[in-house]
Figure 1 (cartoon, rainbow, N blue to C red):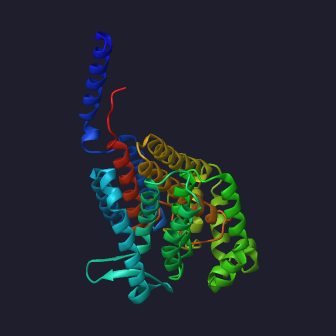
Figure 2: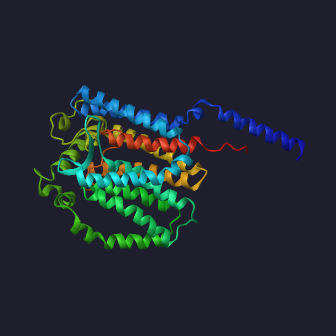
Figure 3: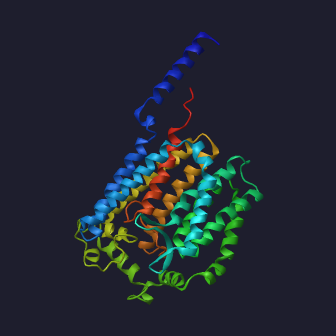
Length: 381
């Protein structure tokens, strides 16, 4: 090796060592992603205070949930991607076991059997766990196999997907089952699934729609019919959509002002602090507020995709990409159903709507992204 080449190599190693010693890499946290998430959480608390009818107790409860969720994010960020890979199968099997437990002895609320209860400790939805376990399991299966995946591997992934999705759909929870399924589909897409095969699968999915319709619950069919024509039952099934679109439209460009919304504050808007919190945001902060929050979401998605692109192995790239795109689907479905361009499926606005299990799952997913990003080997250039 020439003297000048040796000096360059030593200098590059020195820079790598210096980067290892940075504060953020010691604690395995991505500062850009953390900053964006904290801004989103703070914005969500502001909107939640108004949406809850200025009930400070609701906001305090959400702050405690965010504290637990952020702690889960930090803990998962400390685990190496190798550890996450090893735990993919146990986590998936544990999620399946809990879904079976829900089917047998789950707690019933609002007509659905979705929760497990540990008396005096916690009440949670095991289906939320599958939003992380599903992409981790599919990515772990594909990690050691040649890509793009062949027909055999696709069929195995389809079985991995189908079992929990069917169990979740039976609860019934169509929204969560679709999100869990999309997490697995995104892994396959990022694994290099051919466009010809994607087209064939799309045709099969379209052909299966009549079968899906026949197996839907009555209230789910009603949601689809209401989506197509909300005015057919304005005081019943169409009430939610009509009130939410009215609230968003009445906000105009700049909104009516914080806590000054009429549809929300006079309680015309249902589920205003959970699934329909976007309508409160649109009414009180207008188009400007809606655009600002959407830009914030898109910046988070862009950062997640950058992390996925920089991942150093197949497992990290597939998991990071799937978690990021599933987060985007959360946003798209919620905004779509509240604005009337999608049927109502009960998907909350991520990290803004009131809720505990969903927040923990989402921030835990971002902890996995930070782990994938911060544990990269710092090789000299």
